[in-house]
Length: 215
Image 1 (tube, one colour):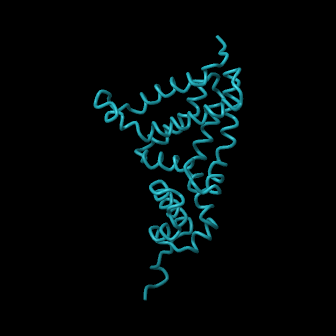
Image 2 (image 1 turned 180 degrees about the horizontal axis):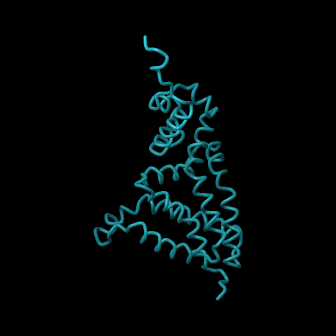
C-alpha cells in the first residue's frame, strides 16, 4: 500500500477547471441541451458530486462556461467604448476583443465561435435567459453610445441593428474560411485583419444609414 507521502491528491481547483474545459468543448460541439452532466463528468474523470460542489447545477455550469469566455471580452469592450466617438470606433470596440480572443495564441477559433453561437441558439428558455443575462450591461452601454453617435435612430432600431452586428460577427468568424468555396474559387479566404476592416466598414454603414451624422 503506498505511503501517504507518495499519494498526490488533486486540488479541487484542478477538478473545477477540468470540468469547465470539458463542458466548454462539449457544449460548443453539441449544444447546451444535448450534453448531459454524466457525459461531462465521464470525460472529465469526475463525479456528479463534483459538479454539485463546484457549480450546484447544470444551469450554473453553463453560465460558468460562458462567463469564463465572455467576461474578459465584455470588460475589454467597455474599456474600448470609453474612447469611441463614432459608429466605426464603437463597432471596433464591440468587435476587436472577440477577434483578439479568436486569434490569441492559436486558440481554437472554431470552438469559440460555436460556443458563442450556442448562446443565442439555446432552445431551453431558462438557459438562454441565464446566458444572455451576461450581455445586458454591454448591450445597454453600446446602444446608448450608438444612439449618441447616430442621432435620429430609435432605441428599437439600434437594438435591432446591434443584433444584426452580433450575428454578422459570429457568422463571419465561423464561416469566413468558406469564402473560397462560396465564390467558386474567385475569392481568397481573408485573414483576420482584412475581415476586421471589411466588417467594420459594413457595420458602421449599417448604423449610419438613416442617422443624422455630424460632419
